[in-house]
Image (cartoon, rainbow, N blue to C red; front, side):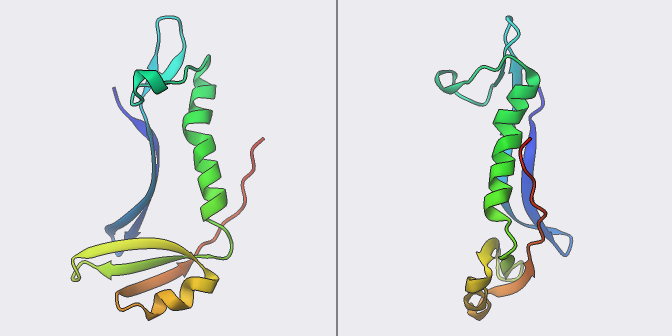
Length: 121
């Protein structure tokens, strides 16, 4: 079985820098035709009557919620550290906090978050 899902991570100058979200799921199906994520412990598994519903609730809706709350127009992606420093970190900060981030000794770079709002149907 292959796990699938959605990951958001930062690649800077061709190298992995940091990750933000990993919505990894492992689709499974019962003999009665219900779908569930086999990564979940049996006592926490939620059963879905359709594959579409499974993917929507386990992966797509959490991704939409995360992007709508973390990737807003007033946010910046800040990179700290570096490979020579021995660590890398990516942070999403508001425009208001950006200037403080730039003052940090390990500040590497910042880019604005560009987002077009997606809504649920």
